[in-house]
Length: 234
Image: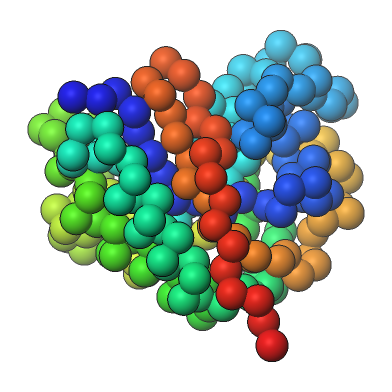
């Protein structure tokens, strides 16, 4: 069986301010697959900042539409790419209402300032339509998800779609850190990131394409494999 995993993500437009700033914060560009120098933050040692951003750096700057999965049919990715291309061709481009820097549990992320029905529709289709191509989650993966504690509805979604935080349980976000259990350290990091992110906060964010990300094996990071343009507005 192939070790490659795939995901369908939103990634900021290439060469946009959001892509540049977010990628520099993570220390890696998911499109160019290149390491980047991270900004210096007051009160946070550079090596600690790199440690705190290690988890999202591995996945690249993104917001999840369909979470990572293995293909059911070995390593033939053609049906998946064709499927996502078909999804993109029937969905209209739109704008997110804006982003804000927020805490989600113990980590920091960019989240929406208001609901976005177009996003909810896109995420639902990305989760459900390509799902026959997904290899069902194995016992170890299911146990790992359940170890965090799931509600009955999250357990139902895990059984149906291999992930508990999809459809009505999804909260759109671009992850910027891993877990930061010390509230004071988390606040220092938030305060340091806020001015860096100020140019892109609370402004409409264009969603003009969806991306297939690919990871060749667990040890390698995810990167943008293919962008698929949505229909233009108008």
